[in-house]
Structures are given as C-alpha cells and as structure tokens.
Length: 259
Image 1 (spheres, rainbow, N blue to C red):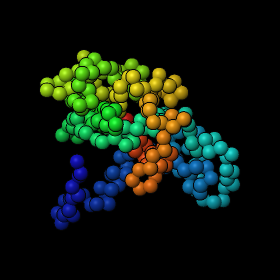
Image 2: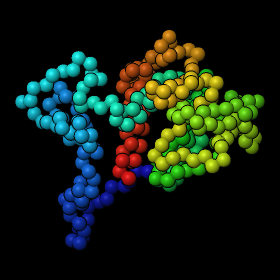
Image 3: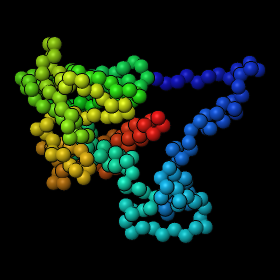
Image 4: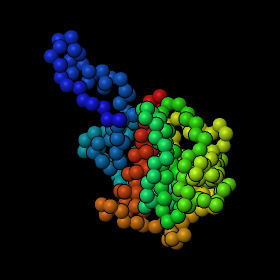
C-alpha cells in the first residue's frame, strides 16, 4: 500500500524535517544500501562483504585493470548468497515459458502489510503457481484454486517447488473447481518465494543452480528460448529477463538482512 506523504506543519513542536531525515539515515547501516560497482569504475563504495570493502575507492587516480573475464571481477563476489539467489531465479525464469509469457491470475492476496501473495502464470495449458511471503512470520497455506479447465480429471497430479528439492503439492477437486493441495502443516517461510510446477514438466534437481528447471517443449537446443517482450528487451538475456527476478531477490534479501 502506498504511503501518503505528510504535509508540512506549522506546529512549532513538530520535529524539523532535517532532524527527521537524520533519524532515518542514522537508523540503518549504510553499506547495506550501497551499490558495489565493478573494479574498472571510478566509484567503488563500501560493502558488507569484507573482500569487497577492502577495494573501496572513489576517483580516477587509482590504476584499474579490466579482468579478462567479467566473472573474475574482484568487486563481484559470485559466492555471495544474493548473487546465487538471483542466479537461481534467472535460470528458473529463462527455463519456464509460463513465467515469461503466461497470463497472470491472482489466487490469494492478504490485505495486511507483509502478507501472502499467490498467483498463477498460465501459458499454452501449463500452469505455474507462485507464492510470495513478504512478512516476518511463516504463513500456512492448505490449498489454492487453480485453472479447472487445465486440471480437471488430473486428480493427484504432483507439483513440486522448483526452488528446492523437497516441497510438493497435489492437484485435486476444490469445491466446483480444481485446487492445488499442500501437505498438512505446509507454510511459506518469511521473506521467501515458492514456485510450484507440474513435476512431469521439470528437470531433476540441478545441484549447480540449486533448483529444478522447467521442461518446455518449444525451448531451443540450449534449453532456453529468446523471447522479445514489451520494450524490445530479450527475455532470455536482456534487461527484461534480469530485472524481474533481481527485484524479487533484492527485496527479499534486504528485508531478511535488516531483521
């Protein structure tokens, strides 16, 4: 929910705006919100990662050598959990046509701040169900409606959470429609995402990326398809393909680190 801006008050007892801003700035650890630039850039800000913080520098007077391979840039810690989390989300999105091109149908949305958001992405008869918990507490989920036209007659069809190797759900009748049923006691962990896909349309668990991937009939020989989306960016490797998972990763990671 958007926060309404407060109007300036002539009340002399009101805290001056300058003091309010100071309080906001002093209440957080600044390195958490700094952008770590590549080593070849003139601005290399401080970081919570010790090996990167030691390279902090501003100005053009320090010699900079461009690494032969961008993945070897010392300002880019590929072992960091934020890098690995973003890498996982990008790999999943690139492998799943429904996540890139599917219609969106909302299945659940809590009114309270920090609640659960659940939605489906459907493309060519394939439905993926995404659950996002933006809150500080685990949220239990027992069942969600899914598309009856796709799933009718497919009772007990298994779905798995792409982002780990063990969470499962099952298709079944729900009222007059169809639903995705989760195991008893299932809960979405705080500040986390779950992406459920039909088990028969996923790969074995990829140990390198730490995720399952989608099996798409129309994917190219590398397992991914380049798709032009609105704005002319390539969904496979362009800005559009990166920003969506990166935004989710940054938001959830930042909330988790501030706790």
